[in-house]
Length: 146
Image (cartoon, rainbow, N blue to C red):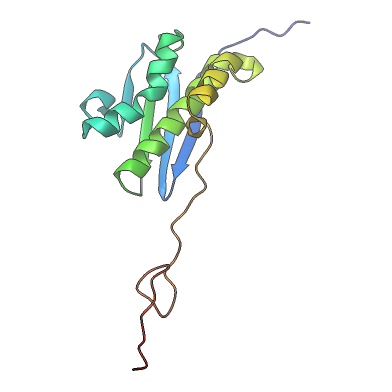
């Protein structure tokens, strides 16, 4: 008996950068993208908005966004850390959504990897902790013996 291929009702994906965590939900819709319940097009500053829209523009160019709504909740970290987490979550969600029942959309995934690897892979770098005998991670108190 042949299995019917059915489209997922929703796909949940996450993205991380430093201490920021973004959770994206992709559902059937007509191309709307919301960050913390606000449209992505009113996001400030403009540089952050442009960076967050990169995976969306690639998906639109490949005609992969017309039937999907993306809702992203992001918390923690600073502004640019949140933006990097948002773009990773959106890209991962769209790859999974467009893949259907058989898995991931290989063509879209390859395009994202060609553009920027951090769209699909979390950045593992973290802040180095402060050490004793100094003001920060590397700087030490100077001592003069003269």
